[in-house]
Amino acid sequence: MKHRKLLTVGALGLILSLSVAVIGLSAPKGGYWGNVNFAIYWFGQNTPSGSKILSITEPAFEQVNQTFPDHSGVYDPWAVESTMQAAIIAYHDGAHYLAVTNLQDEGQSYGANFPWRTFNSSTLAGAILMYENTDARIYCLVRANC
Image (tube, rainbow, N blue to C red; front, top):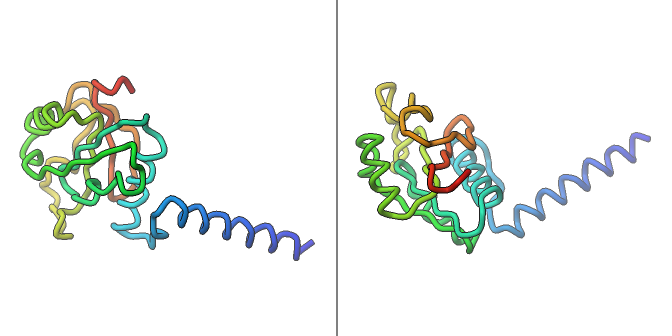
């Protein structure tokens, strides 16, 4: 009985490892970069084909199309100034989703006064929190019909 359980766990680990390799992501190692990879993976797997994401804090989201060719991402650090600025840029870029992370693209913390740290869906009309982990959040914008 013990061997059967070990075999099952080992097979599951192999399947998960192969799944990560097939979709092109390196196995997340945890921490900030692991959480960003999990958010990118969630976006690619759980949004309709043709979805576009605007990241205001992390350029890694620009690379979403390397793993999910039918999705796209754009990074625009100018959108970090205000929710109104983010809404304008998202509309201009045709983004359906908004990604916010706790660190800047240089890996520096934004600090406790970072306005997006306390951002919630009511701050930007029509934004709906769709995904969240300790370092990344993804919001669906009203134009995506989420």
